[in-house]
Picture: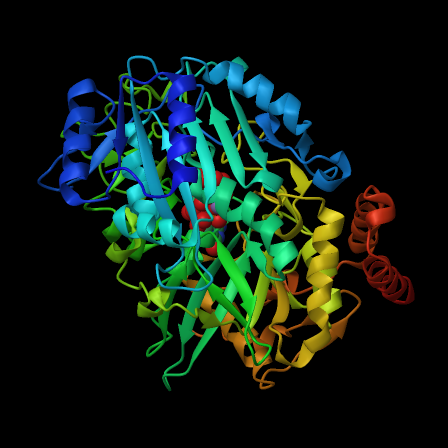
Length: 583
Ligand code: GTP
Ligand code: SPV
Ligand code: MN
């Protein structure tokens, strides 16, 4: 397979001239190709088969121990003008960036096969879908891209027809963190990544294309590319609301996207549209509609069990690639909080020893096709996407942020999103558990200046009535002993119910300085063993702490200088004023 599109052919030729692979393989995305790649990787030791009786067609990949997460400090947005990338991004001048990274690509694929992966982000017939081609020397990337995107012949056909595609060049290089860079050229619709084989660094359709490049395009074209799950919530009358939630990495998107309603909620159903990324467009009637650009899940493994997330637990019992989990004596995958079995070999392939840390890496992941998820919505393939009733921001906060609150209107909602802060997680290399600002859960993923991004969000306010309402949730409040106050997981449906009822003007709320909160009695806690004091704590606003928080938000926003939209400044001032009046 080659291509009729000369721009694509010339790019592939020029990459081959620089990287000097032994072979070039154009991926068709078919079953035979996939099987032969898996066999070759099992032979070379890149993959190993797991217990095929209990985990049919499941494989284990152990990455280089230095290459286990995204690397925000090595990720760059290379716009001609530094201010366009903004204080939220590392920046390098495009010419310098190309020179630096091209030198690393020189001869990088000697002795290897170069794979050309045409892919489509979004339903293949959707007008909202976008195309890309990833060139990589990693067969692991190929089989993962096949699960995560609509990859192969159909995508290539559309690329040839439309002629516009994102160029993503990737090589694992020598995996030396000193020679690892993830560079984005939004003005050229291109990405260059070297030195990592891991997740968001290497599967370029995901964070690099569908968020960093797409967010940049979305701004000029009038839509939004967001780090959001999309979920349909069906009540016992068969009415469905679609909700899009932006939580930072490893803060509960996959779990919420496929949650199982609690016992007390008979007749409720959850439909998964997406678990990580949403592309939102205004339709002709002015409603926001969402598509999921992805076709699979690259999800956090630890914590997944029959109680927390049975859908995910069942889904990953077949046709799944596990990265950096432990294994048991009889070669089943094992991870912390799996609740059954014992680890015998850890994620580095060593005999398990509790002294050397967790058995599975905290950022170990499963890659699996969305079609294996029992709650996968048929509408995930709908070209026009689904209408969104509510946007929900959230973060991982031990203190401060209540279980749920609602913004007063769209502009206030943009402030709520811009103010999101969350404790860092193992999804990025670096310190874990430190609170940092993560506006709209997009800190690592916005491909341009956050101030311009907030201005873009604010442009949607002109048709408020048809827009989703905006909320903020926090499943992660803790008591003094570090115990979670809220049971989370399936029980989060109770909070989503209040959110949906607010969207239908059916639920009560009390006005507070930070927005609308439910009274404890507004959240249905039937069948839940939770103390009244706990509900009070979860649904209270500590004015003193919030004053400090808003000071810190104000300082953060001002760090964006002249580009900061005046409306956001006013929204912030209004909350500060409310808190002042509150005593
Ligand atoms: P990325 O794939 O990195 O974007 O993460 P994500 O936002 O999809 O997070 P995910 O659903 O994988 O959850 C991350 C971790 O948080 C897992 O270990 C979960 O078990 C845990 N978690 C998810 N939801 C809840 C919840 O409601 N309460 C608590 N306490 N933990 C949760
Ligand atoms: C995240 O970190 O938000 C992820 C995993 O979803 S990765 O694909 O590595 O970005
Ligand atoms: Mn994510």
